[in-house]
Length: 88
Image (tube, rainbow, N blue to C red; front, side, top):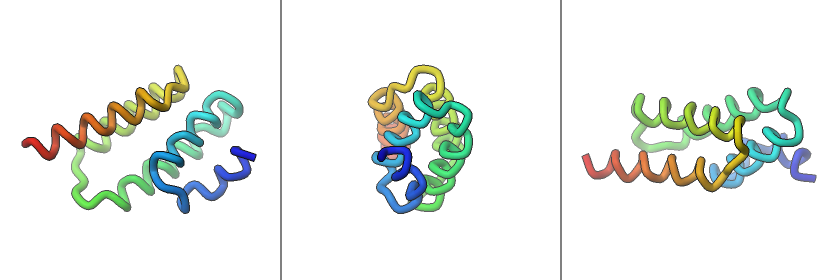
């Protein structure tokens, strides 16, 4: 069911879509890149203020998600980057 919902990745909120990427990383690793790139495209499109630091962080988060499937750590890293961006 979760993997069927993954086809709707661009219609989910970013946190749910990232969680689905984590499931794909664990259950269908050969498909992970396709979902990760879709998530990144949606994240870039939906973000009000985009900068290279966010993109670099997001790619790092996706690589970490591929390795260990830890969605909460991925979400925390993205939130930390957002806080740092707002503080500067």
